[in-house]
Length: 145
Image (tube, rainbow, N blue to C red; front, top):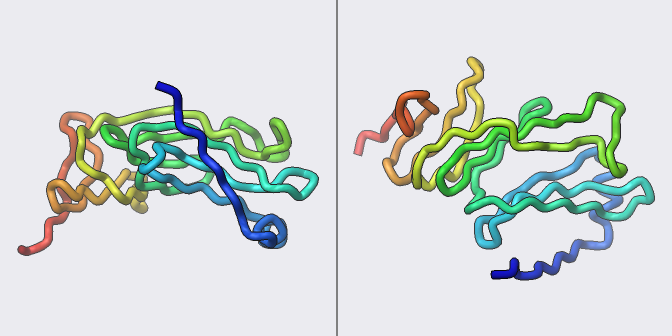
């Protein structure tokens, strides 16, 4: 089955704002199963890269890594470019490096704690959890209800 086409439009000033702030954006949408990386090209035009994943939701960036939750997994994507290196006018190239299979937990948010552990909101089990190499997840906090 072919992937449906996606039309994207931006405000007229988005590219200028990205350049002024010297930033790029990454975001997910599980409705279309995409991870987007949005920035600018050397000529000042919008640059948009997309990658398909199964129900991507939570996204966290730290250093040269992105952590993303999907339907059954939490992914670690690593930037393979060195400082000052570019590929096709981009200064980041995120490649899937690791994944941890969690099962269908509806993980909407993901973050690293100060110890470097991947923490996530496990909405199906109503808890804050961390990855565990022996289990789908390890609950670390549950609300009192």
